[in-house]
Length: 424
Image 1 (tube, rainbow, N blue to C red):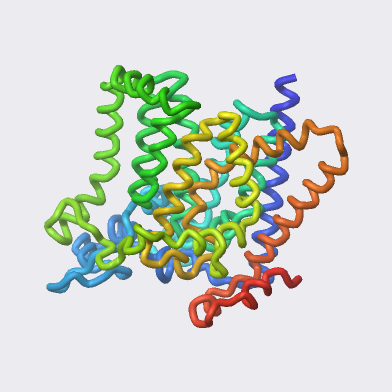
Image 2: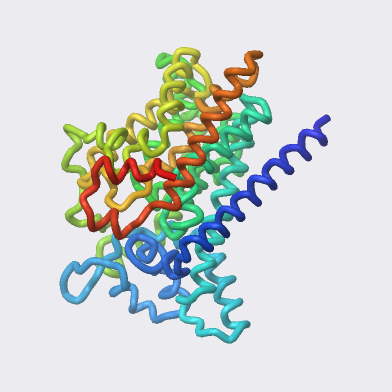
């Protein structure tokens, strides 16, 4: 029976993987995007630029990276940390070897390097989906777990930031927080050195890439708790594991060390706020409505699946299922933080991109909903649910094909712009 289920899972994932490749091929045929879009320009270049300088150029170039801001005396600082480059590095080196083998110019920039970035994002997202599926299977059936992770990919803007904008950080953060959730489960099942290393590496690198990901630590401290009074028991448990906690801190320091070395090399300071004048001026009155319902990228508007999952999350809390308290605290915190950011819409964004990495947490209420639907005997409810899922996937694919970055940047964004995504 186990082998039959295993073959079923592999076939479904293989079919989904092939559907993803077909969708990518169709997008390439219809939109004709240039491969340099994966790397050059804005955030993708900021994340990637560490690699050519580190492996192929003079390290003196670190003081004047191509995508950075001036800080005086001919020095420039990169706003972007090196976490994404760490994950991209194996694919960069493979791309470099292939480029040299084919006799092309091997300066770190070119179609082979750019497609290396695409393949890296694709690899990490699907690896994250596998880790997330493994966790969901502890709570839900195979069908519910598969449906949950595939909806996360095909019905949210994770699809766009994997296939069209793989140079952004979101695909990598999605993978890291999926791995983190998996490792938290493993740690509390067996708190040993191996599980501690995986847990601390995943969350440390996620925080290095996007410092706001530190709110995900709530999941570690409140994992599987159903009442606030249980926190004292959890605290005593963690204190009893102090050698492992020290190991976590050490791993976190080692992950951050390359970035600290870069900061010190450029500025003379080991810790430096590279965002300069960008901050959180709205923290006392965060723009929550903009984050959730704003016409420019509102999370619930452009990803209605998350509106449904958020409602179900409340039922999760009432039933004390799947660390619901921890998930609610993580999601409320990050929505508050994003609403406090100086640009709460996160500018050019396909949907609300700053919440993509938190989709793994929302997989649990989604799995709960799908499990509840699948056990109901009424076929009409199952048909309506299937139709609803198809519509959300279709609209998300529409968003992927119709998004125009030049229009997004240069034109006022109003409801007419939003409604054009619903036109076939």
